[in-house]
Image (spheres, one colour):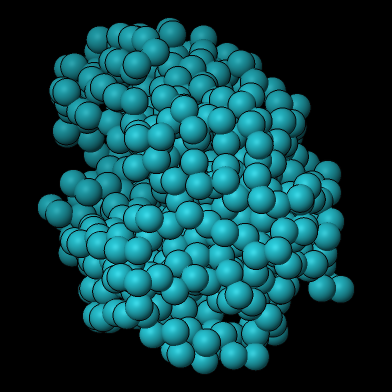
Length: 306
Length: 306
């Protein structure tokens, strides 16, 4: 099945303790697509400026099931982000953000995308996320992401959005900010009372929780020996998660757990190189091997005798 | 089988966002014993001052297999610690430390303790940890803990100790400080090159890793809705871990993994109340139920079809 994703398509300039990359492919829609397209067909909706290297994006996605018909090219500058990570790779320091054409973005879902069974509303203005939902027909599952900026500036819209999504992914700081609950179990319950049946709280290098009304699942981040560039890990996670659901079409709790692990595996690949480089290199075998490593990482047999 | 533990026996005064407790039973040896004694016999070696409420300790441990023959009562003041936690319960702010008789502590292992098959060297001066090892006869497994103070002030002794222990438990900040490696996989390898076959790196609310030369195991912290007082969680973890090993006598990788989960379960109980209160309340059934909850928390079935 297909995943429709609406998100940013940007050019990133990143500095880490291990190197530097300028104007490389970035943005939540880009990372999501590079990740999810290992598992399912992706329909990407976004906007870029007239300066965007469209050929580079096309050739990066050549041979992958990523439909770019919804990627609008508008007059003006592309969204550019410049950031830096220090040794604590868990938090980015934003040096520059130029929204460019992204600041006037109004998502237009192409006719042929409107029946997508899986919809991921990347981190954009919740008013626009709601506009996307008005344009699509009864998906099997709608998930959204958000960030501190929208929690502060668009709280009523975000709360309205929550009533219309099945699942939200956000990081621990965002969950605390949105709910004013420090404890993540309580924060997740607060959110579920406002709509979503599932809440995924991402803790970066400390893994991710998936909450439902009656269960909690936890997947650690893969303990890599070298984390090269954390940019896009959360979007790669979302792509792996949604891609796995779209591939299997199964919304059971057991399958959602597997989807979280596929998401975590994709996040762990994303951070091994700059931009979407590593996500483009790997194949399904690498992904499945890492999922087996995740299983081995947490697996223990219960001792019924003791 | 029996676990010998050498550690502090102290009086704690703790303030958390949820309450306040003054001069309650604390110290690494106390938490360790309250935890491990659910699973195995414990021999506690430590020192208290003439002001210590020995009767309270005895009645707390009444009916439990904790042998206090190695707990010396010396003239002078008991070790007292006063600390505070804010909403981020992961780090204690130390307000006062009075070492009292603990500052002249020289562990004397009673004759009848010297053949203990499992030995845990709680967080004391590494010179004293080495003195303990000189007094015991070939244990099946020796584990130690340490802290930032000893890493700074007794580095050569600590490195010498590492050559003589099978396992070390320390937290992520301590592992980074000891090894000067930010990455925990590298930090663990650095430590294993200096002696221990196993390294457990505790990350507080973010769980714990156990490293061996060829494998990594991860157990999350249990996602509690209310963490009341984190004091002693690490020592309760060590007690559950060593207690489980002593109960089973099995040092296989699979059993070490289970021991980590029993340790995590004990840590999760410790933080539910002040001091060792909760550790004294629970029974083996509560412990086994929480271990099953840990299994459910991380369990996923690999999908061989996808």
